[in-house]
Picture 1 (cartoon, rainbow, N blue to C red):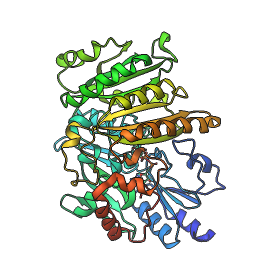
Picture 2: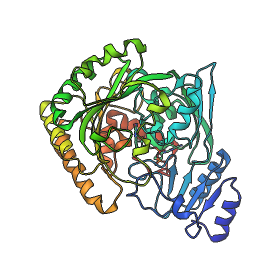
Picture 3: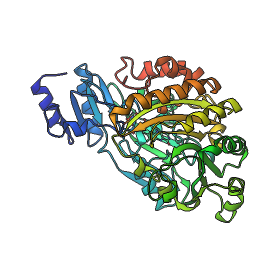
Length: 452
Ligand SMILES: Cc1cc2nc3c(=O)[nH]c(=O)nc-3n(C[C@H](O)[C@H](O)[C@H](O)COP(=O)(O)OP(=O)(O)OC[C@H]3O[C@@H](n4cnc5c(N)ncnc54)[C@H](O)[C@@H]3O)c2cc1C
């Protein structure tokens, strides 16, 4: 990893800074979103610009160091950080630029999604992303990206127009439909395997104020609501999006009588004309929700609605699957494990990925499950490390019970520690092409702290 002098020299050559194990800020700098992850890198390089990233890649490669790339630090398995290696931390490369003429947004490689929502909103534009605004753009956008806009505008990868990247040999390239097309194909779902993205160019979409929010029912109604939801969501127009969840109601701003209650629900986002929203939501309201908080909401507010309930540092254990259908037997398992949610933060979500997301060819990007209707995830979550085993057991048991009804693979950004075979299964026949491109751009597997 280089001697003391070369490490010092490396630090001096950056506009940003390096953080070493004996430095005061080290423990803060190595923390990631999932409190279960406790990795101790040898060097954390907080890069300020592209030049810093090039210097860091060259230093890591020349000194045979394990390298991890840190965007927003949200990855479930802590793939933004590593033990004993070099963390290339992009969190200071955090800028946005909206071009209202082309309706595009240029985004620094270390941005969080809240930055993009904020910048685009002033221009009535949004980019498909996830449901928590503190998630990093880098990891989410390179792995797929699903959220409130998926049914109308597709996955995040479907809105990437161009990326600037630093490759394993330290060179700087642009990848788009016209330049380095193979690389452009690979980064739209293949994760951070191919290089470090220092900037993204996204297509923005006309989104300003949606009609959204949750309808919730007591957990006893899960069977009835989920059986209705599975058919409703697969047949509704692309203007309407709703993800299904089982959850425990937190405190304020929810009404006091619901605090601590286990419930099921759907969180909606209707993107059509507001005067038509009631018509679209009527079938849900006919099921008499016990809580109904759906109305006009600015897009950045919807996209950050749950941030407050999920601060950095909770313990998280994740399992995921792609789902084509939800048969009655699967509904029965959701009822069973929904009633047994082990802690107030634990939850299960079914994110719709039909609609526009399913209209892209299955080989047009590495994302092979264009024919799945949902990405399902169950997460055991709790602030207390003493409950780690308990939340992990609930998640694994739930997953084992429901996995037989899945489509096979899973969304790689919602996997944790399921291993190489499962990653391979998730790319299906796109896997071999990804391997070829990896061998061309990173033959020595420098960027291997990944779902690789
Ligand atoms: C609370 C929570 C909610 C979530 N909700 C959603 C959701 O609604 N929709 C969804 O699609 N996903 C969601 N996710 C999953 C999310 O997509 C992944 O956790 C993703 O890896 C986070 O990206 P990050 O940059 O924050 O991660 P990091 O931990 O920083 O990085 C993860 C991996 O991404 C790669 N990477 C990151 N930035 C770059 C870059 N600039 N260049 C090259 N590689 C890079 C690295 O290889 C690294 O291994 C959620 C995660 C959490 C924790």
